[in-house]
Image (tube, rainbow, N blue to C red):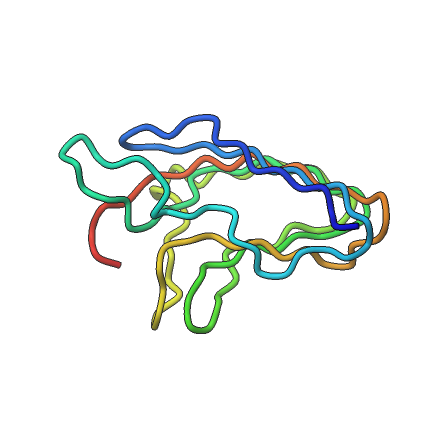
Length: 136
């Protein structure tokens, strides 16, 4: 049996996208799983493809396990780490969101890895992103 996971796209507009992620673990956890695939997001009003996102805000709750959000690249880079057994919200809008600084081989996607997942542990995340349409 695998973890019971879900990624729901709440909004996929020309400027912003909002995602709701959940996991009920069977103990196997997740390792660098693509959660935000920018190539699957809607285009800009001019028809340009989305090439990346900035994390504008994040609300989360973890029970038992921690979560790492990663920027996908040749060498994945940590975007933010969320501790186990904790709930909080972050607002990065004052500086237009957390940018993707991952470097070589980046494709704009956001990955997720669970830390210390055991059977029955959970996470919920709501991520609001600012969409980018320029070369990464």
